[in-house]
Length: 254
Length: 112
Image (cartoon, rainbow over all chains, first blue to last red; front, side, top):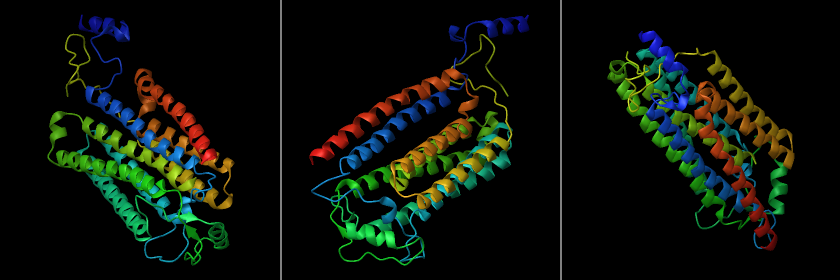
């Protein structure tokens, strides 16, 4: 009788009520919808960056939009060497690695393995903290070089581009007089706003992960019978990684 | 464990569907793909000179990375098509915003 009832239930249309047409919990559905809204937030910031950059492709007042990788060419303990893109690639690797440990924690949660969830959540938190440390170093170096919100001294002149072209990867490099001039004003401001907004998301993600980690240690999910909260925290964490893919592409590669 | 999947006892607030582990092989495969693309981007940046084609490569592989993160890590490949559509379809509007504002930005650049 009960089986017949269940079979009849399975046959009725998905939107007839009595179950979730998405087959996810309320919390997970709301997390997805929040992430959709957050995707619009980040795309508005990145589109703003694109519009500003396209309006400075050729300009009589200021120089061209500076090549970002030639400005972010520093690496910790390697002062004075021309190492474009290396440090951000390391940051990207850290974020991808912490994404993997996060998804391994989710997978361990499906098997109700408390020990493994704990271990992988710990690695994820470490990865997030390492990424934040890298970003703090990057910001500090950029500000030390003269980046400000209201001006941009990173306009690269013709001479500067020739100088950059003459140095290879890993060579000693210092800006010379005449290499740089005042450039498009929003360059540094947009860098700080977009990477800052992303960094704030990473920070919130680390806080969420720490909360979930403590809840795991205290056995909250074990008593609840499922580790769905890890999945929700994981969705947020992967979204942060997803945004970084585009920040990395548009701020450093292009 | 208690799941509300039978008619009559479905509680929309507390309902949690039963989930099965798919194993870790797909996750590690995705990790190697993402790492490979990042290294590929790094190499292409130095091998090719700046050009529109290089930018196209970077954006294309950025979208490939996004596909793998959303599909495998965020589990979207294994979700119902209903959920995938309500989340992914609205992002089409972003493409319109990009095209419109890049065109306008370029036009402002012409008269600056």
